[in-house]
Image 1: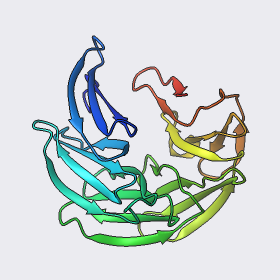
Image 2: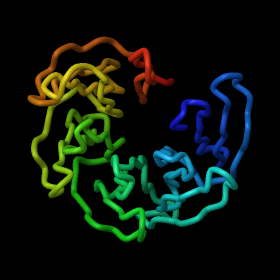
Image 3: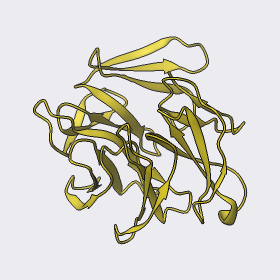
Image 4: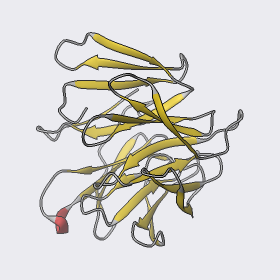
Length: 231
């Protein structure tokens, strides 16, 4: 949650979303969901956007009641792999959704639910990471043989460049360090079992620290800047 008091956890196998107190570890609420993969909350913490991987939708939940207030149609769905990740821009007006099977990123208006743009990216995209200045969207390409990170302009949707990372880049997070000129993008490579630390402005590899087997996610703790992977 925006205030750090709650962790929202998706469980695609059990078709549920669980809300956990970060202070006590106690389960506070459990909501039914359709094959949820990833989740993001708006800045006010009032709405949760949940990707329904096999349903081809993003469900928008009220965090107070757990009720679905809207569904964004992403595709493909109906038993075919659909949306993997969803992220909101700083204004909260746009939702960026990666679509695993049709190899696209779709940008939605959160006000109307309409698709504003569909962008072709590398095969089997993972998450969408928006740069701290909001000017770029970084998208890792999945698949065992992939090494590609696609960098998009958030203004035009055009591909600005493609960067080579390790094998099967699965997740990207921006490190909260330094000025714009020194921003780092950390790319978790699932098959290589390492992290490509990139200088975001140039795409140059700065380091490749190891990761663990099965790691497919990383993030930075708000205050300590510590990164961590999940197995």
